[in-house]
Length: 197
Image 1 (tube, rainbow, N blue to C red):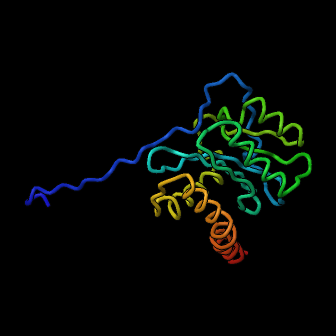
Image 2 (image 1 turned 90 degrees about the vertical axis):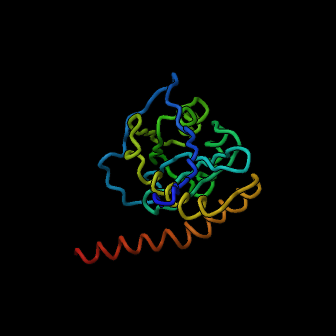
Image 3 (image 1 turned 60 degrees about the horizontal axis):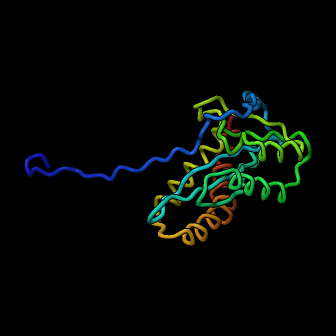
């Protein structure tokens, strides 16, 4: 390629910031560090990502149950606001009806720290937990799901419209990830655990 004067040209991927921690709302301590998770509705993790369509970005909020690794709540919107995260939270609550004391863990973003979101969590008796600032490892389960979503769905499709995203993303979450992809990864972990016993 050097001899012929050819150069590799790769498109730079746009990066969108989804976490705004510069706000005056309360920041909660991290309750999930070094915790043993062995029951459904013990710990839920929440996160937001962006998805590029033809002329703009849309946003996806998800909530996962750490014990099952299932996505139990999700929402899509053109706006990255508290309504987006509340919609995902309400879906998860409707599905699971958790007992009081379930830990809700997220980053320190304004969508999770806002008055309306915190009021909803307090109303249902959640313990509120947040990652340390700028530390994605504190929310590794949610980050891992987002990585899987991007590599196995988003990067394989060129979404043109919001309708394209609304068709594909719920299908991937419910029919591919929750039903097939998730169980195959858990089976690998279980197999490795059994070999160590």
